[in-house]
Image (tube, rainbow over all chains, first blue to last red):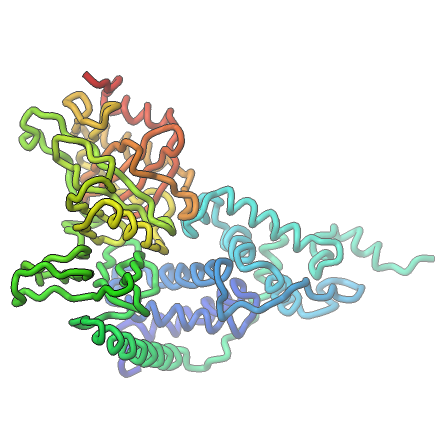
Length: 180
Length: 344
């Protein structure tokens, strides 16, 4: 594409879908996730001379995304969607059958404060250690631990949308059976 | 917690972007950002020119720095605030911002923040001056170890550290290489030189002590370099300057080593420090004594260790800030063969 420096178009074309998915997790919304990814890629574009060919543009882009999402916990952020309460728990039956997993999980993520959501995604999806997350976010490991713990607690809440996901399969099926 | 990962994977696994041409989308967005910034810059410049500003500004760069090779960002003005890296200095009421001009006559500009761009020295002076910190390599050789030939046999001081509001570390470099400790930055009318290693910026303050404190207290920062200490991959030499309890650095407190085993052990010790101090928790203050550690490898890195029971933390010039235990400091001394450093 005209105007794009060498290698940039190829990088975006190849990694864009993965970055949008990452953005969706960090924001809890597919549209805002795509916005987040595009905004980060603008910054990657501006830093491209320093990132290509010897740098790691994807790591840089993800870092920009994480920091933008993390900052949402500290100030009003245009990607942040207000959600005072967790969305309704899907009505009975198997979790996977009741509603699109994408919708339920993204809604549950969206209901978390931004800081908790970012830590949750980094810890349990990206698989980073608490120390690595603290280093990336510039906070203490104590902050990481507490945010992760609160996020998990919120997701496991008995009346939360993901409660069934934390329930052992046997109990889940038993609970779904009508009583005699 | 595998279930969480599976759920998250499942949630976005099938998700497809809606933009069919993301490259064009990103380019469009970039152009829109530039246009917005140019419009804002025009307004800011118009306001500031009215107040006596000269020179061109760059708008704030919000993106974090790539881990290596990221350059210095020239100080610029946004909405009445001078931005230099992670530092924000509100322009005091009635003050102006001027870009240094080599061709300008030698004069002391009153109520002025003077921005000295690289290669634009000149002889203008101002109560507040901002310039790029000299950096000679990867990670920033902000200042080196005190070489024995520079010492002249006398005691040399440590330096003082500040933590600006928001968490940016600032090092008072007046005292480096001088004979007397300079741990009271806001006393006297002397020129105060404040080095912001993460923003690669030096701020010079020429004013009385109270005014200096007022300016420093007005500074805000939003650093992006906290985390574990950024260190060279390998170090060929290490040196430590450690003050006695009066702040003076005597011969027993100045140790250098080219021994690869020692250098590797020091690196290992520092890399093992993972108790990251977040920006909000940083606490190094000018009342503390500091040890200065310089590691030379592919580039040189300075690590300043603020000593004491209350707030013992290490900051690397290239980024990162961690809390150190007494045991770690003791181990560092042991690696350098320093038993105790006492005043005499």
